[in-house]
Amino acid sequence: MSARSFEPRGVIPACLMPFNADMKIDEAAWTAHLRDIASVDGIAGIAINGHAAEVHALTIPEQERAVIQAREVLGPLGVPVVAGVYTESSLEAGRMAAQAQREGAEGLLVFPPAFMSLGGHMRPEMIEEHIRHITDNSDLPIVLFQFPVISNLSYPLATLIGLCEKFPTIRAVKDQIGDGNQHERQIRELHALDNPVNVLTTHSAWLLGSLAMGCDGLLSGAGSVIADLQVALFRAVEANDLATAKAINDRIYPTVRAFYDAPLLDMHNRMKEALVLLGKMSESHVRPPLMQPSPEEIAKIGRMMEAAGLTSDTVYRNAA
Image (cartoon, rainbow, N blue to C red):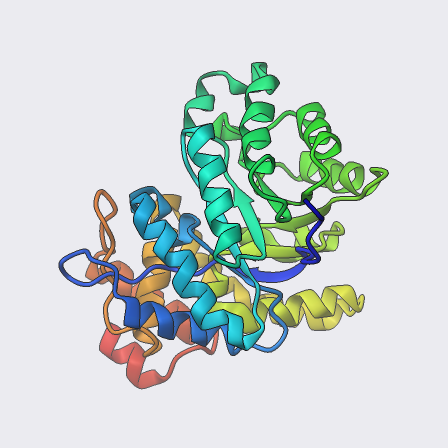
């Protein structure tokens, strides 16, 4: 297999997945959501079948259909599709990677199997085998998801570097390690490899600081709402324009409070509510066990959207 040309860097929003009240995927709403994100000048691609899309609650056929539909929508617009590979089974991961490639995805976002939280960091050969099944079935560029330390699913630095050296189609790491010291070290060491690997931050709660450490871009669910601000911030950091970057970060900060306050597992539910307030989604259903935010929290989201300059007074008053 020959290497693919897509280089995962820049701003790659992770899209949400709209559902109807009966919990079926609302394909018309999803198409509109994809087109809305794709309309932002400067994005480098769109990630599907990730946490933002509630991938934990999507069936395999639904994930396969998502790849097909995303390509139908985004292909004519020239926007690359990065498809999530989220499964406990390495055999299934290989099949998912092959299907994504057949359907025209330009990259893969590879999650660690959740059962590895029981001690996978002590058995690096397990994740090597998982990725081998993927690379044996696809030569698409891989974005490897580095989970937070507290999840017990993150890769020790030596394992992370070893994976990147062993599998040259790993072209980027989506870094959510959650520790500034380790984050900076990973950036520096991944960049220092003979075949350098990009770092896409997903530290959306401290995005300016993370980008300033030298990240090559970002991959974040918040891009489903504020992709334009993310692009502007990334460009300002690349240009070493600190004053502009700080001003943009000041606009982003209220959205941090809207999306990323505890409990963190509600972050994408809150993003759906924000899009409803902005008139970009008509409904905000989430699949159980996730729950929709309370009326009080929705009102808070409205206030934070207003503080970020993202919604009109009328929309805010209706939310409150």
